[in-house]
Image 1 (cartoon, rainbow, N blue to C red):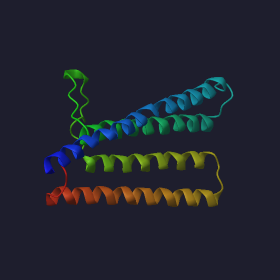
Image 2: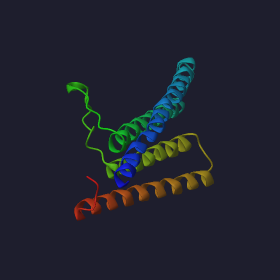
Image 3: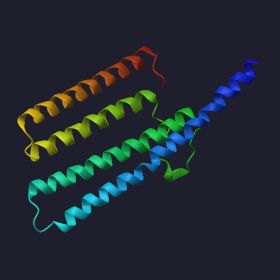
Image 4: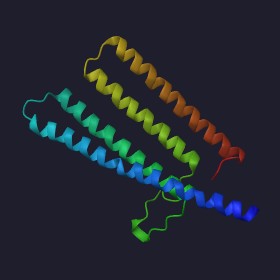
Length: 165
């Protein structure tokens, strides 16, 4: 009975697969958004100001960071919770097999803080009201402090040997 229950529990991990696939399919929406931003840039290249160009490029950078985050979470989570990935030779990314849940949490937190910083810069360049800027800056500080806390807790857990290496 116990063995059957354990096999059932391990088999249920495959229910996570559609969630990882959904994360990867959401990359299509990011492609559309990046295409739209670049199309606007090309259409307006002769009249766009430096500030507007930086804002468009920050939007693209923001979307690329989000895409990287989606792929990293989907791939590392699949490998951690569902099944090992064994790519051949040169096709294997350096980080594959090295990301545990602690590393992923830190990388997600850093990515969120970076995305927040880009939004803050875009708001600053877009001459957002000072009240809104203060709110965005406060939210960004919270993200940065949260990132530092997550990294610190991960480091402590690794040092104490309680981390899931």
